[in-house]
Image (cartoon, rainbow over all chains, first blue to last red; front, side, top):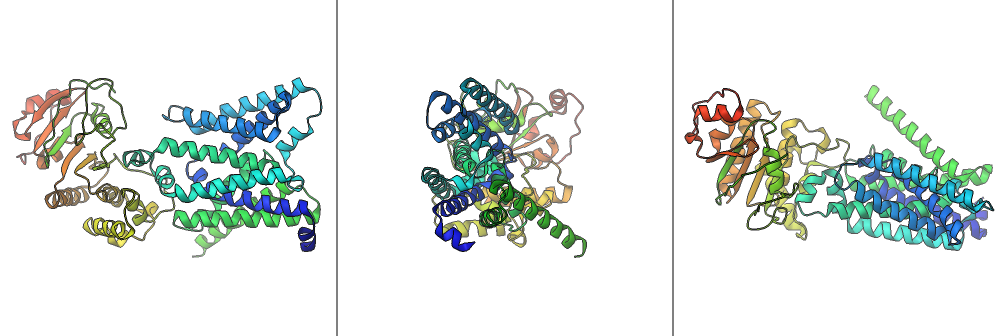
Amino acid sequence: MLSDFLEYGFLQRALLAGVLAAVSCGLLSPFIVLRRMAFIGHGLSHAAFGGAALALLVGMNLSLGAALFAGLLAVVLAIWTRRGELTEDSAIGILLAASMAIGVIALAMRKRYTQDVMSYLFGNILAVLPGDLLMSVIAASLTIGCALFFFRPLASATFHEDLAKIEGVPVERMRMILFLLIALNVVAAMKLVGAILVSALLVVPGAMALFVSRRLIGVQIASLAIGVIAVLLGLAVSYALDLPSGAVIALILFLGTAVARGGAFLARRYS
Amino acid sequence: MILEGIDLVLEPGEFLGIVGPNGGGKTTFLRALVGLEAADRGEIRVLGEPPGRSRAVGYLPQAPSFDRRFPALVRDVVAMGLPSRLGSDEARRRVDGVIDALGIAHLASKSAGILSGGERQRLFLARALVREPRLLLLDEPTLGVDAAALDSFLHLLLEIRSKRELSLIMVSHDFNVVSTHAERIACIARSLHFHGSPSEITEGRLAEIYGVHALFLDHRH
């Protein structure tokens, strides 16, 4: 199997795109979990689906349409939740439904071939094109850069927003940057694991990593490692058993969480 | 919360206690001073600047809370309060110094999420003090803290104040706690009802502001 991965370009692209998605989603995941916005990945991936459907209707590049629409909704989300009058989960719920509705209506109006758009819903990591890989490289580079450069203000704003604001942290800008990074990564990862499963990469590694370290930097490294292991293992299993890779990756992440929770329970019980 | 007719000046190094009934606007007033609430009219200047601009302001929020799962050690949380662009040696010196001064050195490497209420209060005070503020704002620091912890907290606060040129504004619903330590008090119940030395206020005036008969303890200045 290893020789296949070394030999075939589509497998190498799948591997690289998967690892890049795992690294950048892993870095963002602790912030998403700690800010209690686990459904943001779900919401923005549906926004991207709506954007791809609209792009198909107007004859635009699908990835560009998905990225623009998801980015627009990330900005709307940041503005709507700025003053705390609307909670993030409510705003995500509203935008998710609206985006899905736009996507369904756009597809109904098209009445022709819509398979490309459907691939955004379910993903196909083995059909990653060089252009998709470029998107993954851009998303990962920006995420790693922002995670390093804005680590302290992002951590401070996530810990206590009011105090961070008083201490001079631009909390609203940090929230906007975080939402835009999530949108970018959702669009990059959707082609791999699909809209429905992208939130697995954005939520599970961070949630699991919280049990691993007592410091945020340690949690981020653990989250990144968990994502990468799940993607590599998921790709290998899905290739060997001829199963959908996105679903296998999501299931491996779930099984990892179940084992970690079970282990923690037993450790508490018998310690 | 509507607040009006509040005209107050804090002298450098002064300890001002803000008292008043629950829902009277004390916290709103403090939040306006740090820029978390905007005033529709009038002017607020904090250390000569508009609210939220001066970095020499420390703030201890009411019943400070955070997500207990947040992965951070006590020293990490204190370090979050450091001004940006501080060298690592100076940052370490400030964090260690304030942790020692507040008597929480034994907690420095513990997870912030496991602290008790009193320890959490000291943690947030350390985060406010690590900025080396000239003005420290405390919102109901006496809330949910037992008498012994409160006493030690207030002594600590006064000790820090005596060592630094620090002005203090402390909000409390408890007149007796504030009047024991503050040089001046301001009674706020939607507007400013009294501003002066604690010894100048009469029991009748206080009862009028609070809407009930207030019990004076005889330790006012």
